[in-house]
Each structure stands twice: as C-alpha cells, then as structure tokens.
Length: 209
Image (cartoon, helix red, strand yellow):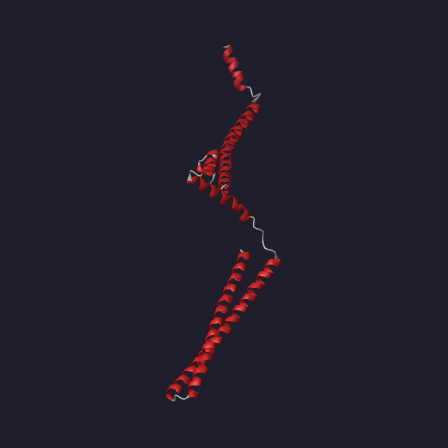
C-alpha cells in the first residue's frame, strides 16, 4: 500500500516538468548539431583535399616533370658527370628547358616607344618594298619594249642586210640586253625589300604577342 501511494504521488506530481522539457530540447539541438557538423566536416575535408591536389599538380608542372622521373639526385648528377647514361643527359636537358620556361614567362612587356618604333619600321619597310616592286615592274616593261625593238631591227637587217641595218640591230640588241640586266637587278632588289618588310612585320607581331 505504501508503494502504491508513492507511485500515485509521483504520477500526480508536476514539479520538474519544465526542466525535463528543456533537457529534451537541448538533446534534440545537440543531436542535430552533431549530424550537421559531421556532414560539414566531410565537405570541408574534400575541399581541402582538392585544393591540396591542385597545388601539387601546379608545383609538379612548374618543376618540368623532374620529380616524376623517379631518379635520385645523386645518381642523376653522377650519370650526367660520367656521361654513361643517355637518359641522364635527356633529364638534364629537360631540367634546363624547365628552368628556361620561367624566364620566358617573365619576358617584360614592350614599351610604348618600342611599339612605335616597330610600327614605323614595318611601315617604312612596306613602303620601300612597294616602291621596289613598282620599279622592277617598270624595268621589266622597258626591257620587253627594248627587246621588241631589237627583234624588229634584226628582222629588218635580215631582210635588208646592209651595214646600217646590221649596226642598228646590234645597237638595239645591246640596249635590250642592258635593259634586261637592269630589270633583273631591280627584281632582285624588290625581293630583298619584300623580305625585309616581312621581317619587320614578324618583329612587330612578336611584340604584340
């Protein structure tokens, strides 16, 4: 009977109910926080791992693949000095190329003065090439005209073989030969001028890269 009365008192008593409710709320919040932080921890771990892998890839790329060769530094140096292993020489050359790449990447940008000078040189060379080509064309036309006159004089000399006609034909042929030589020289100069203009354009293009 005493136990039954005590059980009834416990069932009827409401003291401490608010404390139990707060404890349940705190337990629910704690469980939710644990689950959330666990998920966030996994995501952050993957993020940091990915960043570390990318940094390793970038570092190995700058090193020029020297680390992945799998050769010990001491053996590589001994092989390079002795000259017994051809692969060591290839690795040394690859290392030099890898060391030269940063220097190429650090090439300073051209100044405005350099760009202006290169543009002026390219324009000047282009004008010179155009002038030389026009001169060569004129010389070629003159040579053709002189040769036509010499041919007609030669035909006339064969039809009427007099000393005067033969002398005229010889003089005209000499002029035609001279004109042909001048045309050949002018064409050679035009070719040289065009090559210089192309070189100037290539120099300008390299500065613009």
